Image 1 (tube, rainbow, N blue to C red):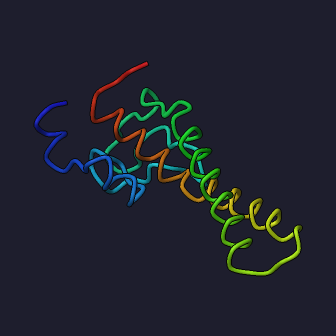
Image 2: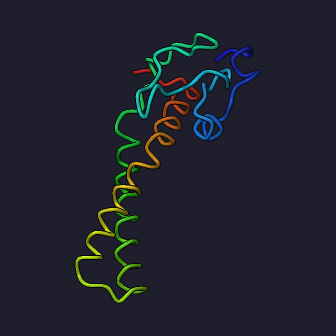
Image 3: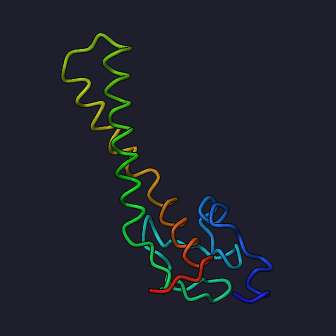
Amino acid sequence: MSEDDRAGALTPLQAALRRRCPRCGRGRLLEGFLRAAPVCESCGLDLRPYDAGDGPAFFAGALAGLGGIGAVALSMLAFDAPSAWPVAAGMAGAIVGGLAPLPFLKCFFIAQAWRKAARR
């Protein structure tokens, strides 16, 4: 990474929170929900070599498990509900807990790969 690249560079956390290019901070890092942009629309950085791999899905799955278990525990302890309610709450918690962090995690992994200049 040259000095010019580092001048306006975002940290991986900043790039993930903003969903912006880690080099310039202006171009979108994702097209749609999870598709990585092939090239930054602002600075022209080729993002294809920086693959997120299966890391985001692994961590999102772990968060989905935590969300599902938390929803089941909350519905069982806080409410005197029939046995079907904790199952429904657990499924909803797992879906939300798994899908919500996926774009953030994908952006973070791509920005981290760019930062460390990891190429496949």
